Image (cartoon, rainbow, N blue to C red; front, side):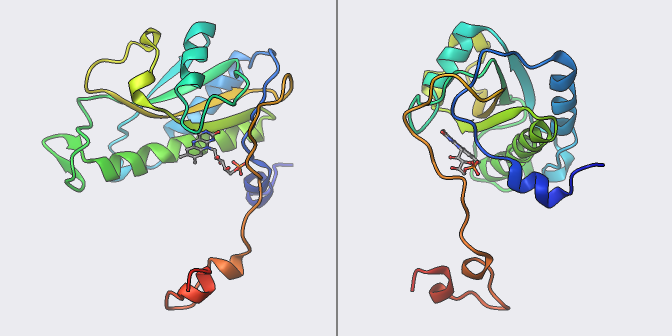
Length: 191
Ligand SMILES: Cc1cc2nc3c(=O)[nH]c(=O)nc-3n(C[C@H](O)[C@H](O)[C@H](O)COP(=O)(O)O)c2cc1C
């Protein structure tokens, strides 16, 4: 029987260390399908997915991760690209002259990142969503000037050498994030 969505959502957690075991092609295909069905601003689907398995490129991407290079290297990374034809990083909302501004573009690419990660969990594949310092992207990715790769998702199986940083997979209780009708800074813990 399929897992309930809440069980799946709670089971998804960031992996920080990976064994060398590779992810089978059919699983990668399903995971990419999950990304494909993600919603986006005006159904613009501004993303392109690069499936990276080359060890040198993977090493370069892990080094380009924000918050340090503490991930063990996953055997596969899906780089989520905003090609320059669809994205200009501007402050405008929505789409102007065929290109998304920064906000909608970033909202939009977060959607496939999560779908990819959840689908991976559903298939028993570990994952890590990570943001990239785009000034450090490895040349092997083929990224052109003006393209953007703000996010990537590593895929693999947990194991191997532990990384040097782990954030806790825990969440504040709903009582500290849900407000009835009106925002309360006290409830949010900031007032
Ligand atoms: C948009 C985004 C960017 C992230 N960037 C990084 C990153 O650069 N490095 C990292 O180790 N984790 C990164 N993470 C993973 C978060 O640290 C992680 O989701 C958070 O600590 C909660 O843990 P969990 O995913 O296990 O529930 C990122 C997650 C998101 C959604």
